[in-house]
Length: 77
Length: 114
Image (cartoon, rainbow over all chains, first blue to last red; front, top):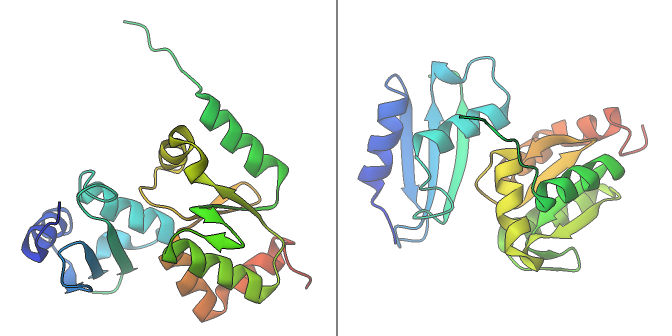
């Protein structure tokens, strides 16, 4: 059950309004993405906590609708 | 309404595994034969650094596969634990490896000789 890059970006944008977000569809199948997210929301957090925030923003899609999402998060927009 | 805390056998197993072993990788497949590219990457990195680790195949039971996700609040596999602490999945481990941070961290944790 693939999801579109737009849908993915909308979820991320909703959770991180200030963010710079870049999304790449790695396999062209709507199922394997790479997202780079730079947001102040990540400031002072470990990478694990940063990625947990992203997964929370995706409301359970990760590991379900979305098979693979390579994540790079930074706190400097 | 009463809240009851239920500890699943899977959670108990996971807690035991990370308490008993300094470096534990929850993965798909076994270290000699990873069943997924993301698990394979982390195995390669640990092997490359010469880290002694215990690989636990989450595909052996659905309860364990779901249990580790709940335990770590992390939706994907692999998951690396060092001295009981969740370090990350394949993206984080790879990023830490590439920056040299992983080696330093493992030395600090006593998982590699200084």
